[in-house]
Image (cartoon, rainbow, N blue to C red; front, top):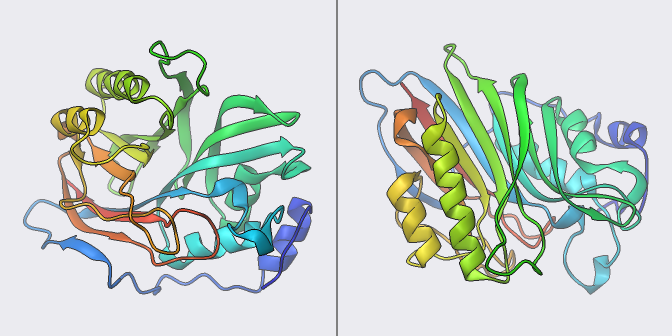
Length: 283
């Protein structure tokens, strides 16, 4: 395994270029939680991933301080997603490299469009969430999320973009990472996201690390406003022996989608979370 502390986007491309992307990458996984036939009227499938990448730092003492962007790229490429929500992204920070925009580097290596939503200033740069897409992005926006219950906690955001998927249908795709410290803040943030989805004129798909569990007040509220792709949902954290169900994909009723599959990718090296994927058919 190649470990890289700091490098430019040019070197990332040189390292990754020999890997050939094919359209025949298997999508089956032993971790399917659900699989359903398409049914009449559903034609256009989209593959969605959410991945908390731990600022591209593999967990463990042996990799302390290591920034391994190629490892993240390899994981994402292996599942061929159309849309990806990323969390814990560094852009031009002292921690990950002042010359490195992780969102741009990952997107460039994968040949995808991207949008970075900065949540906080960090290490001389920015830290937040990102969206990757095989399709062009428009109407990109970063929305502050409420922290009124405890203003001292870390600022959180919702990054959104308008995407035209195959078949010409337009959707709003969103990436977020909710408050890890305060449940009351998480509830306020879920309420805000649900209202944003409700007011949108186009179908809304949310993906991210929500830092809460099924059955909690924030997740119970979310489930009344958006449909989760999982039932039951499976753990994604920590990556070695996951026990916590905190990463989710959900969509608004107006999306008119059918969940074909939902699974956790059995990846244990690249981040302290495992990636979560869903395949949706959109009418």
